[in-house]
Length: 318
Ligand SMILES: Cc1cc2nc3c(=O)[nH]c(=O)nc-3n(C[C@H](O)[C@H](O)[C@H](O)COP(=O)(O)O)c2cc1C
Ligand SMILES: Nc1ncnc2c1ncn2[C@@H]1O[C@H](COP(=O)(O)OP(=O)(O)OP(=O)(O)O)[C@@H](O)[C@H]1O
Image (cartoon, rainbow, N blue to C red; front, side, top):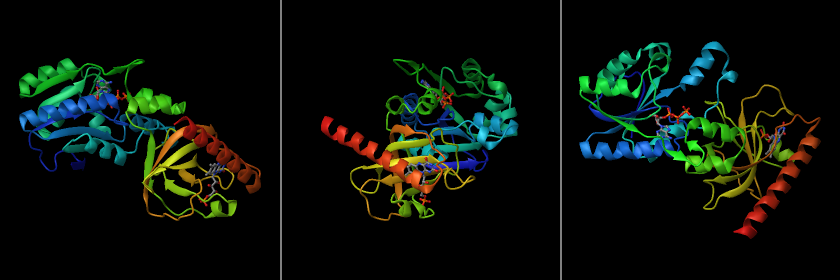
């Protein structure tokens, strides 16, 4: 899959079948849309292309008025979104920088400058709720009209629903806020996980008796925070039972980057540099500032005991 970043016109794009959106999480609704895009691209002998934006428009507008910490969280970081699009057999992703220029384009300018001149669209699919251009005022009818003028076909996909209504990134973000992982994985069509390469920590975990595999959370603002029962994929054939903390370490210091720290149960190996996926199963508690390391150690021991009973129950009910 080809990935074009930043500027839209360089290099010039050949004709394509296209879809547009944020694709945060790449959920089941997106997957239906992307399957239809693939089908049309094959039929028309065109590459299947996605136009997406970075940062997420909502983050851009929050940052314009506030601070990074007030920006709304995303389900997945950009790297994982691009990987998920590749798994949906997309040929080409253009990641347009969402900035003042792009956000100020009127719907007509968006169509002419971006869809026609920059991306050379011949076939376009969008969902029925799709809005675009300054103030999200552009509609699917306007796209259809423009398609007739500029010579591209427009397909509007009716909303993909589940028993609770239209599937959207917003309802997944809401379910994540409530740590409802069953609902999240139902909407995503896969378990919710955060992936990354394991980095070195401060080695305090070893002294505490709970060494951790640490993943830095650098490029996005995660929705989850607190202590969770998790499973680690990527180190051994089977996923490994674990407990994880996502957030800073209030007991140890005050201003630190957000980390995902995972203690894998009964695991003695070091695995720095390995690429792992940490799958979230259940929230145990919020992250706390303890009076000393001894109190923190007791709390983590309690988390480990709860996780052991959870996994033991899972084994007996399997
Ligand atoms: C299951 C679990 C729960 C944790 N809970 C807290 C917590 O409530 N408060 C806190 O300050 N740190 C918490 N931590 C983070 C520990 O402080 C951290 O893992 C330890 O300092 C080791 O850091 P290191 O990997 O950099 O050596 C938790 C870690 C784990 C694995
Ligand atoms: N459930 C769905 N059914 C059909 N099309 C969808 C569905 N969800 C999203 N789409 C379409 O997929 C494309 C990308 O969607 P996008 O990620 O921007 O929206 P979203 O999932 O509704 O996110 P948010 O909730 O943040 O607005 C758009 O064309 C959108 O209309």
